[in-house]
Length: 196
Image: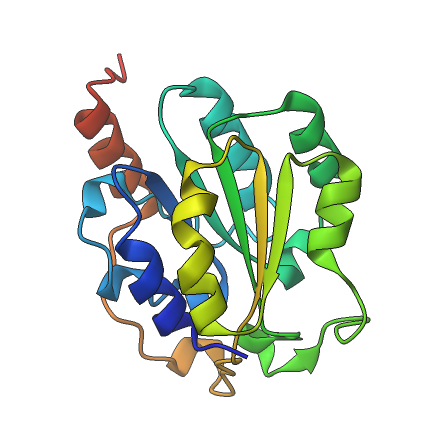
């Protein structure tokens, strides 16, 4: 398994101008590595729906690379989206799954069939253009440039070390982040899109 921070550190070097949507427990760390926060979109609190929202963004902005850092717990809530993404064929979409094999936010309960499911295999068989699986940082680092240049939809499953949270939700200390509305407004400004 790889630490999510290492995934982000390696990915950031190849991000370019991609719009990045970080989700899940691991995704909370993305802000420590991003060098272009105006192109980061916060969809926190939308577990099971961020993949659909990211697809909509990719379809609505076909000239922009869209990268989603998804979680397996959220994806399992909406597995049908893989077929929808494959059918829509967004060439600008890169779907990176950070698979920690558990529901880390709620105390680390195991995700069903965590040891056996092949998410990259499911994505590929659903019709994604290409799919990758990594549990070794060096292997990911060697392939990330090719992944970012590939025609989408591209799926990347990465086994990551869980960051289990056991504190009651109301007692957890969270670093300050921009709200969903602020990130949308900043992205619209960055892209020259009027909300009127």
